[in-house]
Image (cartoon, rainbow over all chains, first blue to last red; front, side):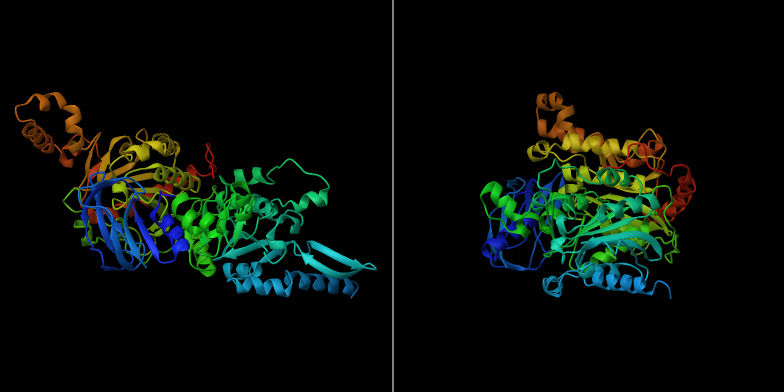
Length: 89
Length: 518
């Protein structure tokens, strides 16, 4: 179920218990990455900005945790459902 | 007293019904974090207002014609008041046969819906179990199988156009129970403690050979987020009761009535200064639509429905000067505010709701157009989108559009029915057209640009030239927009409009000719 970051989050929690995947909920160009690997983030904190439909849309954290891995970089085009970032929670 | 023994028996039978399933089962139900159906009803309705219907229905066991044991029907229902207004309320009793069909007596769930429809009052269904649907145990009772027919479906389908229908998923529910939740104007799930599915994990495992958890199959993470089957997700049952009362407070009791007006303490001439800076000048920067709504609508009156489904479209009920209204707004923070398949479905469904229950529509327009790209095309956005636009044109409810920013393309055009008069005003941030200039220049001037010595420079020149014509005031000169206003005047103007709109409502009440689909 790649349509929605939250749906995927629940699946991952039930599978491994401590990891959360942040997926692109819509396509766009990565305009900004606001966090670094190792950063502590709060729930709803803006992690990345995607430029989509000519608008800068925030991708926010689904939970509080630690940034484990960032899988995209600025100017990269991402598709719906693409893995953007992994958090340990 | 002539009938004393019969009155005593009546009392005794009622007492037995109030016990519900066995003490054990009630305890187990509580331990799982659930309230019993009787507790739910008493917490939902005004104190002492519940008038039960059918308390005597159940399966009795007699010895020498004497009542020895009694298992009540697993559906409890009746008429009650919610904040002083009548409604039919009912719910499955999970402590009796898990709310399944073979514990039902007399089709009480359907009876409740039929009663609500005839009385022209809302019905609240707290579904917990299969909600009166099938169980293979029925085959043994009947000694045969049977062709399925959805009992009471005609009532449900027609009632959707006549009375507010609310449903909450209170446990793990499947089959016709799940259908009842989906066939409603407003539905709620309890996060982590309720699931909705066509069929539960054992049936799914049998079909696919794969074990699956019930939360993963049909929890609120699925239905209140991705699928849109259920509107709102709450943390506790108590919160669900609060949301049910709140939802119904905006609506009339039926589609023949005008919504109730309340006294509002929020001045209709409130002009919030924040409205002057809420939209950034940079066209790529989004704004906070919910904050904007707070500055315009009656304070704390916005009740959002289905916030996570089709999130680029924000939908809810609110009040303006105490009058109920239906609110639609685009959220530029999600998908840039564009209309994808889910947002289209949401748009169509809530326009039907507003139209059915005579709620004037306030549409805050910031629509860049239908969502673009392969995923959107694949999801059928074009058909789902035009269904939404058809709903806009079929609606007869008074309609106001405030173009706060963008209105582009076919989806942008769908912010109202252009063959009717609608109240339409814009903010100075208004920006509209068939296509945004940045995207449209290459399509319209391709040859001129490509043949230029410096194509990039020529493109910029054309863009600059066109941008000079972009001012919304030029559109207003041609009366293509009724007015461009100071954003601070939005609330006073809408409050005045809604009062006028309500004067016209009595002429359009009643079920609308196209009906309301679940």
